[in-house]
Length: 498
Image (cartoon, rainbow, N blue to C red; front, side, top):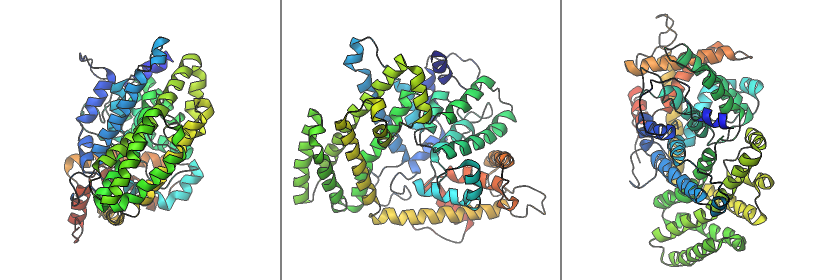
C-alpha cells in the first residue's frame, strides 16, 4: 500500500525539477484554479442556466457549486481528522485537505454547457447511430457523455496552460482518480472510456514530444479504470460532498426562481420524512430539526423572508450527513490498517461515492439501522428535490432551449467541418475555427480515428466519428453564453435570454 501511496502522488509526464515547497496536491489545486477551463465554470449551468443572469445574480453556477463542494468536503475532512477515538489510539486519519480541495475544484472542470442536458444531447449526436454497436462491444452504457470523463480529458490533454511543454495540467494520479470517480461509471462505460482515453494518450502523449514515465502511465490506466471507487478516502469524501451540496443548496436557486410557494411542498416533505426517523437523529441534529420545523410553520403563515429557513435546512442536512460520512471514512481507515487487501478488493468492485451505495454496503461499513434509516430519508428528500426541479417553468424552458441549442450547433459544426473536404482533399475542414484552437481540435480528430480503429465491430465510415470527437471537445468546452454566440454566428437566428 505504501507503494500505491507513492504512485498516487506521482505524475505521468516527467517535468523539470524546479524547487517547490508546495505539496504535490497543493500544486494540483493551484494548477486547476489558474486554468482557463476552471474560470469558464462561472458561466456554465448548475441547475438554472447561467446565460443572461435574467432572474438573479445570486443563482449558482458550476464554479460556485465546485467551491461549495470543496467547503463541504473540507468540513467533513476536518471532522474526521479531529476524531478523538482515533487520536487516543494514535491512529490519526490525516485526511489531506489539499487533495480534497484539488479534487473538489476539478471535479466538474469538463462539464458541458446546460448541465446534464448538454451531456445527453452530445451523446445522441456522437453515439446514437452506433449505440447498438457500442452496447455489443461494451455492454451497459448510459445515454450521456459523462462529464467526469470529460473532466479527466481536460486535465490530461485539452487544457493548454502548459503547452508547449505538455498538454493538460499533468495532475497527480490521486487527483485524476478522484475527479474521474466523483460520479459512478457503469462497467460498460469504464471499458468504453478506457478505449477512448487510450486513443487520446496515443495522439496527445505518444505522438507528441512529451516525456512520459511508462510505469506511471501503465499504473494510471489500471487504477483509473479497473477500480470502481475512488482509491483515496479524500476522493470518496468529495464524491459524497457533491451529493450533499445538491441536497443543501440547489433548492435555494429553485426558490429564487419560483418564490417560496414553489418550494413549500418540498419543505413540507422534508419535515414529514425526517420526522419519521426523528429518534435516529443526534442530539445536535434534533435541536436543528426542532428550530427548522418551528421556523417553517412561521414562514408558511407569512410567506415572507425564508433566508433563516434555508440556513436551518442546510444545517440540518449537514448534521445528518457528516456523522455518517465520518463513520464510513473511519471504517475504511481501519480496513486499510488491518486488511488492506480486503479494502482494495472492495474498492475494485463497489462504489462508495453516494449515500445509496453506502446503504447497500451497510454490513461492510458498520452502519447501524438508525443510520440506514437516515440515508433512506435523504434519498426521499432527493427525490422530492427532483420533483420540485421539473415543476419550475424557467428550469424546464432552459432545458428545452439548451437541448435545441446543443443539437443545432452540433449539426451546424458538423456541416462546417465536412464542408468541401472532398474537393480540398482534407479529412476535416476547421477553417471556421481560430488557428490556435484549430490545431488542438485536429488532435481530438486523430484521437477519434484511433478510437475508430480500436473497435471490434467497425463503425460505419459515413458516421465520421473522428469529426464528431472534435465537435465533442469543442462544444463541451463552451460556456452557456459562448454556445449562444457560436450558434448565432452560424445561423440567422437570435437567442432571447429570458
